[in-house]
Image (cartoon, rainbow, N blue to C red; front, side, top):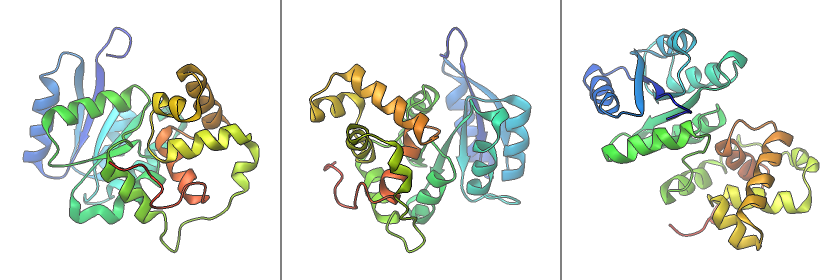
Length: 228
């Protein structure tokens, strides 16, 4: 729930059977509500404007406009500031995960994930958090952050204090606020405050974007994430 209303969800997938399956699963939950469906990236963008969902389940391979391009259009639109995108992918599409996060996605799930994990993922993203904790996510981000076209500009870190850089590094490693607090010997509330300030200073949409920044600036290097 968000306040006293259900979490509004838009499902975008070009395979009707898959899309209907997700919709049926979500609609059965009291705290979740389906507000629309889309079979193409273009429809996903149009439906996002029409329904203003809290979370969009976004497939990557779709006709007309792929999921990454659709995600970028949605996350850069001020009128959809409250909408979060949760990308759905499969192992053979791993090369697109990093691009999706850079485009503004709040995280991703594998299409064969367990039903309860999918539902929990929607709730996590709707709450403003990001799906960055699973070990596979950290490994993928680590791998694709080292691609030749990855940015290496560290000037964006100039606005951060030394402590904020330490916190950003821990976020980049996929740690929660509680884990960051334990790691840096600070209170969970202080960790949360630091994360909020970092997001404001770096104009980051959510924690997923902080992960991208941490890797792109070299603050966190591949292989430095904690073991899964």
